[in-house]
Length: 71
Image (cartoon, rainbow, N blue to C red; front, top):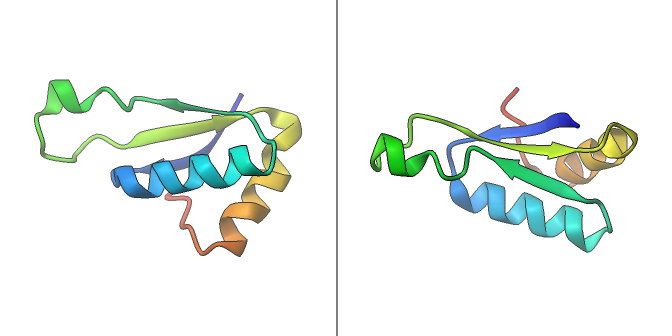
């Protein structure tokens, strides 16, 4: 698994996940439950992971839709 996206914005994470799954790319969000530990500060970013084989396609999908990867 490779890190595709890092963001503190839950709407960006949801949008990116929906785009990728709509294109048939499996993705796995990490750290999205860290908000329980951090309160509502939005300091700790969530990460979106994809398979190594899907990374190039996933990057292209995010770039085509104007999503900053935050890396």
